[in-house]
Amino acid sequence: MKKIVFIGNRSKVFEVISSNKKVKLVHAFVIEQPLIEDKSLCEITRLDSKGQKEELINALNSLEYDICISAGCTYVLPMTKLPQNKIFINCHPSVLPFGKGIK
Image (spheres, rainbow, N blue to C red):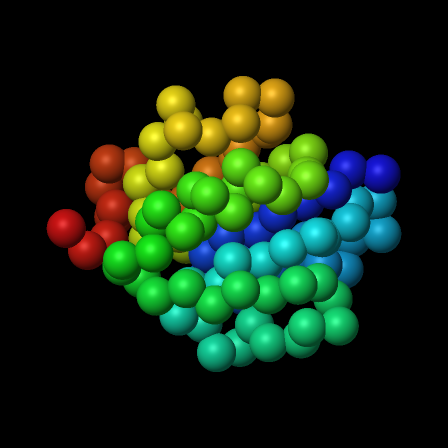
């Protein structure tokens, strides 16, 4: 069973991951999303949309997981500072570079 870490604010993506019986959600880093609050599903860490990037990077380097799914993460995470033996998936609600959100 693959261990998943979620980062972001897209509650529907979180719901799909947490309800999937083929994976285990081990941690969620929730960025300014009050609808994601069920700590019985996994450990949840709340983050601000700015200013906690290093804290997030340090946590991603210390946790045990196989796949990190980002959906609505406001941080650009430098892949050079993250574990190379993990899979990172970034979900975006629109076609980039159009509709990329706040500049």
